[in-house]
Length: 222
Image (cartoon, rainbow, N blue to C red; front, top):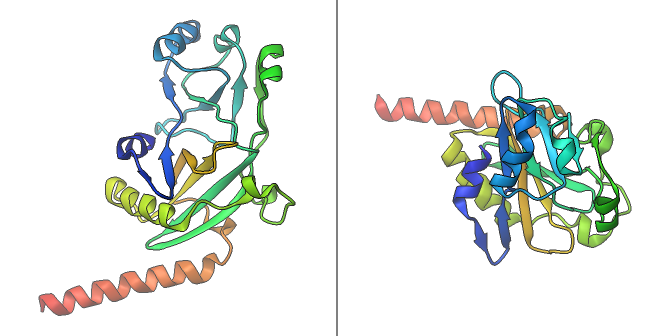
């Protein structure tokens, strides 16, 4: 699904949206360092395990700092370039035409010093859950500012068309120090809407709208 975002090449006066470089590894851990080099991925890399249906388990993240550590990972998995983003991600819920954005704490930034002096694979706890809300935290305005609404509306509209989905969420980060550079790092179809503020009314309005639309179509046909 992230490839659809990459294919959009979405860029306008409100900002630019892309995806980090990524690579799918299905077997043979010993081949990972060479595959990463051939794909031109830059360390550190986020590792997301793949489940049977081919989706990434985005809550079970590891961070690989060096080439040697890559062979310690356990396929199948997705490797994704890590982008410093101030430790905050924006979870964008899509319910039909409705869009709701909340802040969540995310993986901390990796400094040049840390990268040059660290090795191994580090596992992170669940980072995008209700308990990790950053909406009320005292954050740097440059980190906390939500992505522009027109940019999100355009992104959501295009993804609805390309993916054929009306119930999904997008995890977006802003590159630290870059006001208008955004990356989609994950897309989930039919996510847990219980974590979305005001979900009862939004979801009810969506279902009522579907019923009314279906009723109107029947009247036109008859």
